[in-house]
Image 1: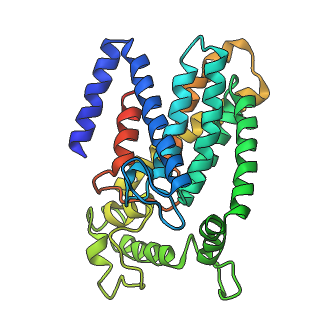
Image 2: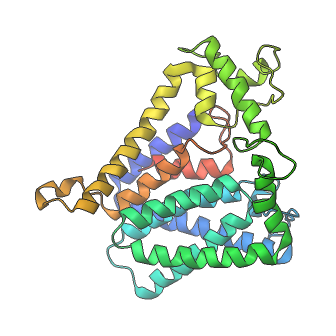
Length: 323
């Protein structure tokens, strides 16, 4: 984690010192997303990608192999790609059209990746861009409607996709004939959360200590049948392992971003006079804040807050921290 943080600071330093570097950094980000997307599309069509990684029966992973983080990678970088479009003053129509068609493809591949959290990220970032941007509101709305139409067609044309994204999801949350109650994500996730809450109650201020959930969940007083390496939600993990002290720091950042976006929405709706124009975010800033917002969204399963970042988080964090 520390090496990634200093690497991001180094990138930020060079982007500030050499302003033209931002353009080339954007090209690198778009190039990376293009490569990952077309590789994943190839895997979906032919069953294996250019590195000979085979797809799962229900999911695709692309260049990430046996790590199913393709959806997380694309869903977090998609608003970042919009950011680099927004900062360009003059974009030729053909390039802009290609970008929009490509984004439709990314939408579909995020769904086909079988990562339901990533699909929620996609919906959240799309709502933010549609509601709060001016230049991209219409084109993103049309693109997403087309994406949803193709996703609907794909879901009911491919039984494996429907089983993973619809049937399995309903089964996990308890919406089935066999279940008698509704669960928060799944019965296992709910058991993780219950164990974490028991730990939190024991030390509300400072928690049990970083990375201790995996050990303490085996203790009888915390055992709810859902022991794991972490509680699968960063906020619940912070409450259990760092208490209010650790939780409040991250949650405050999320609330600040939420307030900024809400204030911007408020002023856009009520169209205040020009004296308050400085409160209106430009399109590029909205796209950038969307990146932060989706990663800090509390109501989804997540990885561990303290473990080494996975492949998609490395690329994402470097990009976001750099600005």
